Length: 582
Image (cartoon, rainbow, N blue to C red; front, side, top):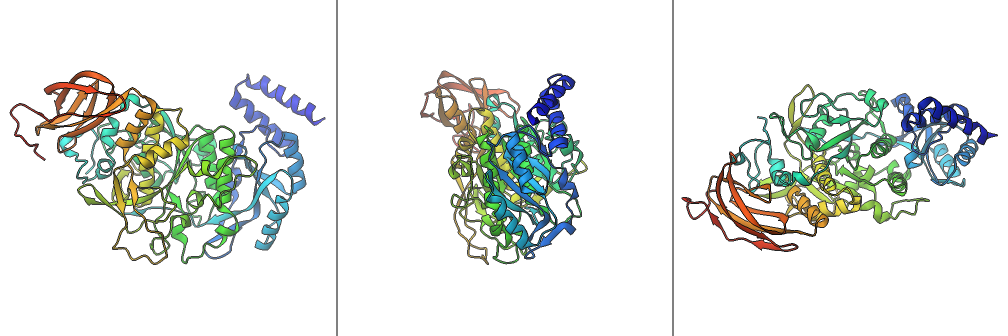
């Protein structure tokens, strides 16, 4: 009987929607929810219940964390049929309040429970066939990993940039050699980037036309906020509008999710992060940025409810469910800015993706390995600029073995609300730099896997953020040097892995007026000492030397050999001194 009803539903939906898939699935899921309380399609997302969660619904367990007293989240076997899901949820009791079907995640509402009751209920639910994991809807005082502290333009004269000695409002772009990475723009394709953050100013001059949302409901609940707008600018601000700043990856569409439920609400559910990630990935995001975490709410070395409710299990199982369905992605999270007092901790205390390790990852029925998940998580610490191309870990950054890489994080200039710009400091600023670079890499070759992208980004480096020996570490932390992300090297490695016919050529131009070297139709930006190193197609041709206005001031023969590096002799511009002017 049920199968006949479902057939009628599908036939009706197809008739009224004209076979348009999005409309079809929306209508089918709406009718299915009305009749059975369960969505029919495997990509349905319903998050309306977030709007009804208030601080009064949260039971504070240890001062740092708590749980929503009437909700439990369950992950189910992706192989369950529609009818098996109906039967399963009927057996679970309660009422389905929401779901994120792409991640096999469902939220059940029960009568209010004590902590002991909610744990007992989770244990009983996990005994049911078809349920991989049942957890309380945990809450934390999750915060953006930022500390609040003239404009530049990417089209400035080349001599206003100095990648060998980063300084000024664009120091972070100089430090990661972004200009040299942008030289390869012919290789870039459009890419979708996810940002789960506080709200976004969609009509900011740097972001207008670039921000989208996973759906109308996400667009309607977006409330412009300085933090989300700042992060979005670092990633994708328009670098050719003649004002303000330049984003790392402006060949992108930003798929944004405002994860904060209410400006006055203290507690935030971890489900908001899980749902936001899944919604962004379902909407096409390949790299998703999370400049947030929970370490700033810590006042002791106790994790409290985090261990008790298996937060790492929830995030790892969500990732595994998405991977098993054919989605691929990289999740980039800030390492965090220490505890409540600003004392650095190990980054796993920042929660969410930072907390996932090979030993605590849980993948349920999916068949996905823990290694496959970790190969798609990048945890980012902050680097301070020492000058001369050397870097130290910022005094506020979390550290530890879960950190993968460092990026500039202090005095980062980017867009903010009301069409303005502002300097902000924190690992919140470091993570989107890595997100932008990872996105550039993936845009070069859409056939890359998320694991490929992480490997390229985290291994294509030349500088390190050394341990900060002047920081007094209150906690017992793991102190390690971290590589500093490099956009140029990552992009070049992606090109090498995509095209075996390219080689590397390096050398030096002597002459203060030299700004670029053009070869094979692509102009490459010189460093301030006149040196260059770039990848190009194999073969021989003429290299043209250009000044800051683009005029040719010299030329010489150049040969590129596939798979190797050719070192050219110094080229001296006629009339120049024998040594470059630095």
